[in-house]
Length: 253
Image (tube, rainbow, N blue to C red):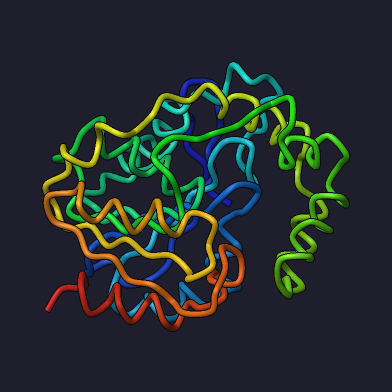
């Protein structure tokens, strides 16, 4: 498992695909890891069209797991992505984030809009609304990884490998991240800065569906697509649907 250091934080990444094709950096949501991009079929479907770089944000997968909320500022998590991009010498990659990963991806793009050739952002909101005194995510993390897995299993049929990883995730670190997220700044002023193509997507029943769809009016160049019948969780299993859109929109001719 290759790693790069972001100051004193070790960040894991995985490579796949065709090195001669455009670079595409992949960042999933909270408690997920590089393996999910592989297991859910994204890597297999994208490998012929892109040079793929999967990133484990701090607190996730095989990256370092700080246990203090001070280590999970949004700008620090965005710098995890930047560390991998700079360390691998990627030139103007496409950046794909889903859920929490979309917020981190947009934050990174907002810091240097010229550094990316396109964005793919799914199922998220521009401002995290987290009431730490009554937050289901934080409360579940506080109960441990088995409780976190159980919550996911109420939402969709969790694939076996993902279930094993969720049952083994570091909920102490993720609880710290969730507390930090309550203090993250709004990204409301960021879309207007992004002049490259943006593909926005969500499931019809995603709890961030309206927030994601409305962003299409805020980016100078954006398109929104929606998968009927899917929620925030089971949409992730629809890799064949979204990868077709990505390849059609953003792969090199």
